[in-house]
Length: 179
Image (cartoon, rainbow, N blue to C red; front, side, top):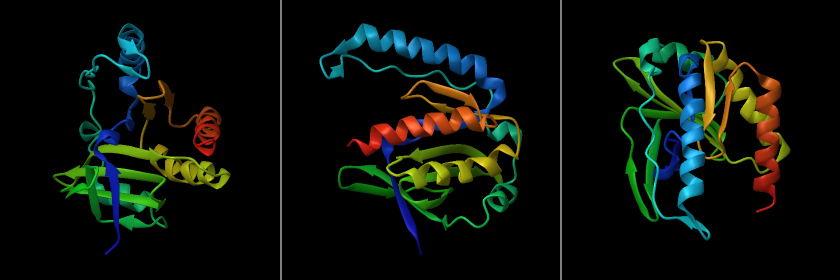
């Protein structure tokens, strides 16, 4: 059985949320930027910022898991998802993923037959990864009115705005390909 791993710090750091959260996310991103400036110390920070809970959850949209999975048909599905840190790993219950490789993946949790959380791995190392990410995001945008939120990069955009999302992915390519 195919398995995939994500580092625990990446959980919901790049997430798909209902568009009703747009104003909230923009406000939270501003607070995160202010906090980061106040607590920056050399190459790190002196404190951590804990985001408030999103006012409207993906779960509240009642997207049946089978409909979500059908939308991503043709992309490899991973039923075994593990998370952890360093050498510690644990299996994530009620969690699956679709991906072409571990660099570009959509992870999701289900509860009671409905999608509960959606988050992404977007480690864009090659030009093809940009296209792969767009191919994963496009069918999700057909399921409702959503936004993509990258909390680490402060990027928030409606999922249907493919031009701005492609530009964001290109910036990730520039950053990751330099590593």
